[in-house]
Every structure is written in C-alpha cells, then in structure tokens.
Length: 235
Image (cartoon, rainbow, N blue to C red; front, side, top):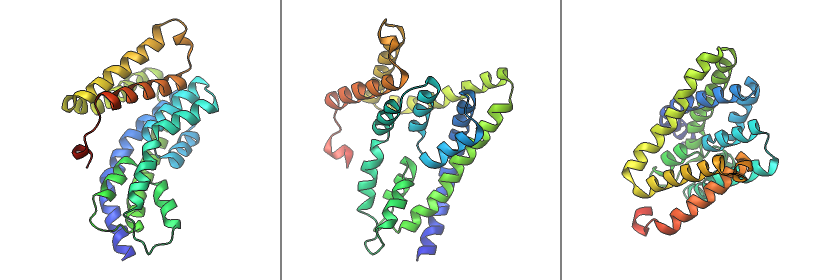
C-alpha cells in the first residue's frame, strides 16, 4: 500500500516538478546576480521550498538586511503553510507514526497541498513523499542551473533574461486580478505602498525587508476587513 501511494504521488508530482524547475531557474539567476554562489543558491532552495519566501529573502540578503527582518518576513509570508499543515494533518492516516507528520510538513507547498487535499479519504504520507520526490529535485535543480548559467552568461544577456522574471510575476497576478476585484485592489494597493516607500523622504530609508512586512500587513489587513471571504466561498 505504501508503494502504490508513493508511485501515485510521483505521477501526480511530475507537472509540479516541471513547473518548479521553470520558476526556480529564475530564482537561481537572481541569486547569481545578487552575488550568491551556485551552491549557496542551491542550498537555499533545497532547505526552504518556498518561492515567495525565497524571492523576498533574497532581496533582504542582497540589501544586507538584519536577521530580524529575515525572520519576520519569512514568518509572515510563509504563515499559510502552518494552516495547510493543520488541515492536512487531519487527513493523514491515523495508524502512521507521528514522525511522518514532520516529514510531510517539510514538503508542503501550495501545489503539493492542493493535490494532497483533493485526494478522497485518508492520505498515506507516502503519497506526499512521492510528490516531494518530484517537487524538491525540480525546485533545487532549476535553482542550481539558473545560478550556474547566471554566473557565466554576459551581463547584457542576463539583463535581457531578467525581463522574463518580471513577466513571470505579471503572468501570475493578471489572471487572478481579472477574476477578482478584491485581488485587483490588493495588487494596486501593494504597488502604491511600495512606491511610497521608494519616493517619499524618510520612508525611502526603510530597509527592503521591513517594506515587505509593512506592505503585506497593511494590504492584507485592509483587504480582509473590506472584502472578507464568505463562508460558502472558503468551503
């Protein structure tokens, strides 16, 4: 039964691993441009598995931010994984040792949580291990290759390829913004507040890590109060 669950996890995790490879390649390029070595970039991806958290953390590293900035930023950005872990923990098989919960929690990402939560009945932790065996190597290998090529490509080519990174983010936010007015408002609000921190005197002295923290708390708080998710929508 464990073997069958593991194979199913491997199969369901193939598209996740391929998608992670593409996104993490961009992260590796940014890491190389920021002065990180190939092994440093690869180690970050191997031990973190969080796209938004890693991109934000990389910005703090490059800017020379403090450990407090890094810790608070990662806590806020990755807090959703705690909720996912609680939810997924209710679906795991009860007869499995508790140690499996810690291993499963390490590999929880938005996509792996999505395929796991969609499974009917109780979840065998080996299903998650199979998905992790696709997702983790895809994310790490993409980062390593991105950092490697980013460290050897000429500057003008790196500048051209860096445009693709912004295109990736645009491709993520535009479809969601078109479907939901609150999401559109969140995007505009985040852009406005971030711009204020860049151009307003005194505010432009705030480090990038705290800008991320303040922007996230302000925009998310206002959005939660102004456009709360209805009970039937969150079901």
